[in-house]
Image (cartoon, rainbow, N blue to C red):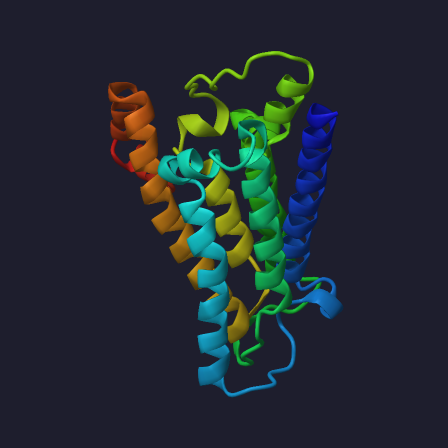
Length: 246
């Protein structure tokens, strides 16, 4: 019964996290005004900026701390190890939903491309391409391990958990973090860039870059020289730099 409950918990956590990701994508798309981050400002620019910075910290700080091995070692003293990842996924999903839902509009237009033009369709094509890269990248890693389902499933069927092997293929041949690259493309590619969206894109991109640096340290500790060699020959986030070096 305990194993069934842990697996059920991981499925619920996965569903919530996946729903929050969809909310994030749709809110940034500006295709559904009711849930778009670009609403009518209700407070001064300064207070809106302060609130949005707070929301980024509310999401980013726990998201980064909970991903580190010392925290994982600490938290598994108080919960079964198979649900540690699902707890991380659940927390991240809830905080991401809060970030998006309570993002404060700030007004202002940076650029706006008329609908039904080449530029309009091109930017939306880039928008969806970015999110497709992000989702494909989760499967290249191991989608179900990344979201905590593999851990509880193996426990459910009485099989030992084994760490994932380090592999370089597909997108990972061109950048070390295609998942983050996809997210960055997704938040920047928009035909209607407001100040609200611009601040959102800048802060999310900044968090991705900082998070990537922390993740790189963990990967070096885990894979050693194998990852250092990978670092030397593969760009972190910008694939173009690989070709410029040649």
